[in-house]
Amino acid sequence: MGRLHLEARLAVIRSFLPEERRRSSEHLRGYAGLPGGTPDERTLLGLLAQMGRYEVAPATEVAATASRALANGAYFDDATGSTEAMVAWVVALLALISADGVAPARREIDRARLRVRAHGSPVEFAMVANAALFLSWRLGDVTAMEAESEGALAAIACEDPAPHVIALRATGTHFSAYAALERGDLDAATAALDRFEAEHPDRPRLMPTIWLHEPRALIALGHGDPRQARAQALRQRDLMLEAGLDPPTIPWRAPAVRAAMLLGDLGEALELAAEQLVIARRWGAATEVGAALRLLAHADADRRLDLLTESIAMLETGPARLELARSLVDLGEALRVARRRGDAREVLHRGIDLAGDCGSAALRQRALEALEALGDRPRRPMFAGPEALTASERRVAGLAAAGRANREIAQELFVTPKTVENHLGRIYTKLGIAGRRDLAQALV
Image (cartoon, rainbow, N blue to C red; front, side, top):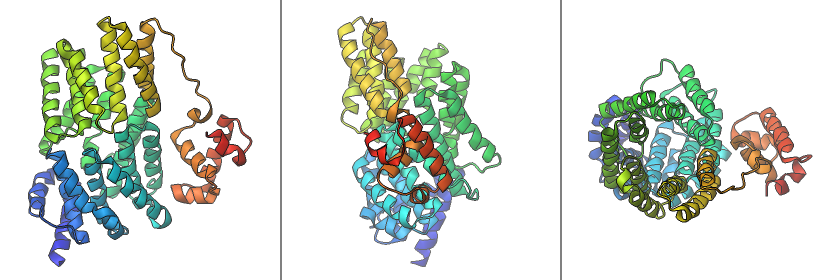
């Protein structure tokens, strides 16, 4: 038992370090048969699930390993109070979510959230929030994802920069940038990434910091700079290859394909998109396969309509609503170009509704512009009322409407009572109400 405990601690340390990834994989393979009956066994299984995600084992196998690690909530009960054990709990959840196991993941997170709010530390709160933000992103709930990101970053703002804290900040930053991109706010996305760089200029290279090149590439595309986008995407590729991993759930090829097409390198774009589909199919989750089919449709004009139709059919079977909205909007634009105006309108209207439900203003705007190109004049949303609230304001408003006092809200969100008071002032102004007693009705 003592040896197994040391092995579990070693595995957690290695999980942060790209240069240890291959040795970590060899180390963990020896524990694949563990039943998951003790906390140390569950730690090793959780890290093994993460390794399966990185190495593109079949998603069903990875989900089974992650579920064995989580043990229907038993692992979290044991892990509370141990940062090392919580690391493996988080990565097991991320692996389960990446395999489209969203229903059991939601149950696990909801249960953990109740406990950590009552008794957890700021780091534990941030770890649960990181799992929740990943689930929200997978489901396509941009507003919830942004709120979880902001909550995680606020909770650990004063923590010493230990590796697990830097990793948590990198993940929160990554998804904050995603949220800003979905709002169409390139400056906010850049600011989030720049702030992380400024706070950790001499940081060690950790796994979550590698992924930050992908949002940098997306920002460059938004600014019309395909050369910079390709450079950032290929930098992420190189760092991943150094560590011996290339999971489809971290799609550096997506911005690389778009950049290559803008640069006129159509052969490179087609090759990269085809590679992404092969890897996605090896993984097997509907979300990655559907997204990869859409990526290939961008690069293969001759099969674009068929590939986008197939992408939508695949995504309909999975949980990822934002990915589905993207494929719908892409298909609507392709149908418009093909002069199938009636079909284009139907698909675009569905894409507009779904993009709005997901909270992606940028995608919704693109779909509206495509519809207007068909001669339609769709009604544009009025950004007032609950829709005008930021992610953080929504969280505070929801808790206040549920009857929580300012101090209780501050304790639950790991912020100061003054911060809550300031949020509520802005909330009342945006909702046009006098105070707390009108809040519940105004949020409907």
